[in-house]
Image (tube, rainbow, N blue to C red; front, side, top):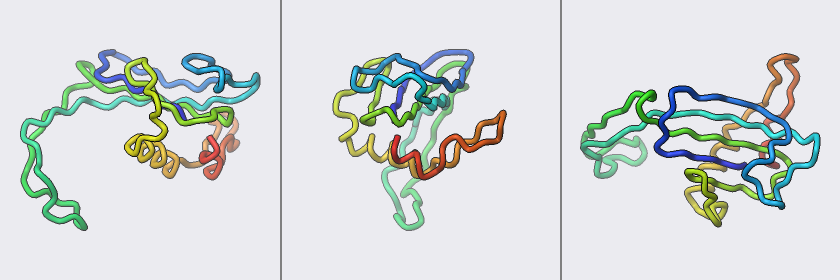
Length: 144
């Protein structure tokens, strides 16, 4: 899985695409053979600024905070975070780009692993919207 994060990001429009054989931002080890399918999704999230932060949990099992918090969420037309994830069976490692620069050894980071492994756990069958055919089965995401 390859993740591209852009923080903060100011754009008026987000584009979501799916492509075959996109060769950008890949080293020689990740060059995708002709005919390989790269699954790409792009999402955006509003920027949230904490004014009063919480200081811990009152109850870990209930996931309740010790104190209240106050935050402001900005409109996405003003400021937002954009994340693009791509998956392909030709990828040999999980990689991360932050603001256009690859983060070295990201695949061994505990936080990055938690994010990528969580995405893979939540993945479901990917269905071609035009044919209704399953193009990637849920269990196949672990191999990408």
